Length: 272
Image (tube, rainbow, N blue to C red; front, side, top):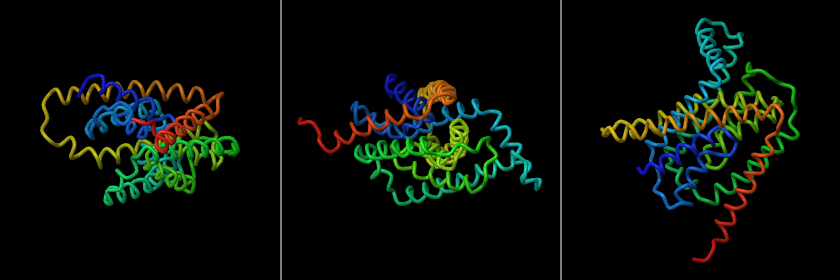
């Protein structure tokens, strides 16, 4: 794989994975816009490993709390903050895993990768994020969420399997609609990404990485993971810092403009 192509994929994945703008939509569009070959499942898995490392590092305190909560649950202590966080993460992951298995079994993913689909989801779910952010209540904070909220956010997250939706964007939308503060809505959405990325990596990565490869292949994957890690860590830190004083409107504007441009391209293509 050409080095420039590898760098582009890693940086796009890293920057867009946790911003509410859809990393999958951008990665699908990359070969369509540039004529480059699809990067393949192995590279996709590598860059997701990089972004997973970034979110675990950035939210290491919350991750440690959830791991302690797993121990609490095994010991029968279900009311601790950590136990409630871990229970919510489990409940919130079930819908996306179930929906993902259905799409995988039906081999329906390719039908959802069109420019028109990405344009509509980019625009429509961007507007939905703006509505939830503007009129959502601000009465809940912290990470010890009720299971009901975790289940609702999990259903929202499952919709993100449609390219262009944005996993972080749609879960933040759900959290804001449920009354969570902006920063805590984003924090919960980011924590929900950890088991989701792990599940997606397990589903897609086994066959892609099991085949015997040469040393150059593994060096490419390591470079892609490292670049995605750095880009994701920077984007995540910037977004969380901005949310202390700025709404999600800048991301909404980007989504609406980008989505409208994609729809123009899909329905009114320029003559050859």
